[in-house]
Image (cartoon, rainbow, N blue to C red; front, top):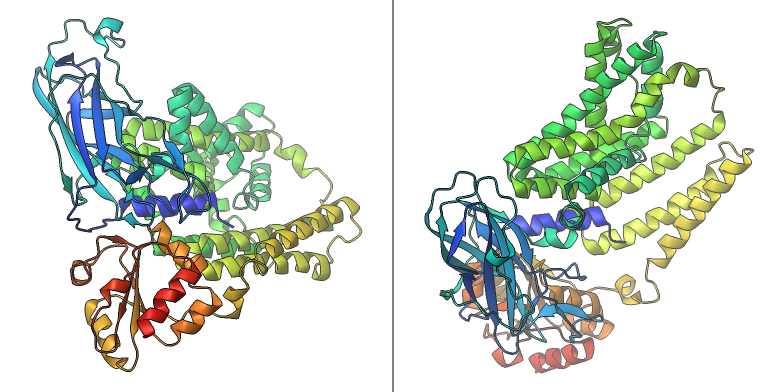
Length: 617
């Protein structure tokens, strides 16, 4: 029941969040050095970053399958050099006690090869590049909060005697060892230590987006031309989304009103229409590039999410016939039926671009992120212009053949039935778009129920076009698929305890609130669960341990507190000496912590109940 678009929203939100935890230990140290002492400004400057991971620990790979874990990433501080590519070693696959599947991790020492490009007109001289490796250190039982291990590398940029050189000869190109077995670099390797996450302006190359950004993958693997073709196809595909569907008949009627027997004039009208659409998306690309992706991250703001939900809901109501989306009369009058209508046509294109925007989709979001990372306004403009051309291509044909289309027979009652189906689909879109605003458990129940009810409505209630055999078969097929999918994801058989009962938590945020709760519950011990959204084992505890009937029953004898440390709280971390999560600690009825019973990793329900029973004694 997880949606790719929402995954990418969550990852981008997580990546841009400031998570401030303090570690007293260094689980990863990083050294960096240039592949040679001197480069020309036109060369690809190669830096080897060697990360040494403490024995008994691992860090997640740069590309991982588990969405709850944090991928390792690398970035350089913005300045005279731009990170073009990072070459990663192959990860190892391991099975850990807290996971049912194998995870991709790095252990021991790994080497990351960085390809840098100098900015134009860089003067010769000595330079230093700084950056950091962003990682999450884990052992077999627990994961620690994400950290940055910083590095610097020094080298000299000499005068470029050959102008406009794009390719450096093989003898001038060093090979970086990315196998994880070591490097033959002789340059000085300055050692670094761990530091807190900083809100500085950096060029982020990998993070959550490297794991999900399909646009970046296409550009890296196939080149820019293929990537632009791919973006054009994405634009075409946007025409198949429910947001655009209501605009098709509007567009046909609009073009039909532009009376002209000249194919050339019709084509010009269509171009103005498409250019209006292109302005919307090209400006979107410019903003993403100029703000370094901040605009893309705004798309996960609760306010923005709520607006998108309302848009989907409004479109759904229009499909159900509560109102009809029409061209505003003032706009129709403004357009006219002559050459002065070109400006009105352009305005109509702008309107369509805004209405289609809610169907942004995961691929377009990936494009926003990629453009934001490059910081290149021209590239952002071109990419989104190509996207809008793909979106607008069908409208050119609609303009050229609008007179023929308007002469077609009426679609009949089956079209009203299609609108009902699209209305249900858009309600579903509104629901999954609202995921960040509701709890995961609630969503996992509501969405399957919605699918079942939607399918039942189409079969039992909706009687439109009942005599249209083909339409009815398609409708019933979709309804049955929805019912089966919804029923199979309710998990009644696997998690009956979710429906039968749950552990009753107090969700507290500050140490003052915790102290007050403990004081009020002086007649029984307290159990405190410290968790974070990025903590995979925390979610495993919620999913498998805290839903166990015996754990729930024993929890009734405790004062149960849950504390969210996603953004960190230095006072709480210092008070309870929290270095990593999950942490479950027990306080007796006198206010003393039972440190010997502290849980610092995932425990199965039967093991956890033994700890709870000891705390009660």
